[in-house]
Image (cartoon, rainbow, N blue to C red):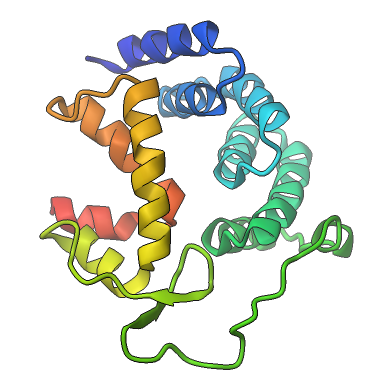
Length: 214
């Protein structure tokens, strides 16, 4: 399946499920991959109307706005996205948007930081103990997984950096991803889409996937 076929597949899913943020997000990602940035912006705006806390959608929409020449709009999106990500505890997309703002000569505004209640992390001030990790998805200390989910660099990263609690949440979310996007994990395109959602949900750096595929 080529990129245009993927776009049409996700477009049909989004049209059939107008209130499904996941289907629209997948369509937005495919449009960005095809460098159809203006179309992607409209789709991702709809994602954020459906789910204003979808951290990765802010990253994608800001990137699409930058590519479309709308620097001001991109900065506003990153500001809103930073606040949403911090409120959810999604540290990696928050830091990514902060870095993008700084690269544009902007800084995170106090209005963005305090636009909603930022949850205080109750385990601040201590380090993980034996059998624990500080989860890079949530910033919280949680139970360490007892085994690697994959025998590759991605599995190594998950074992060292993702808590059992976050992994359990991904397993539940992955069922939705597979079923709603009708993914065939035996197909390279289906596996790629699955990996993209796992990367975004767990905040796994792209470098882990690059090392896996090297």
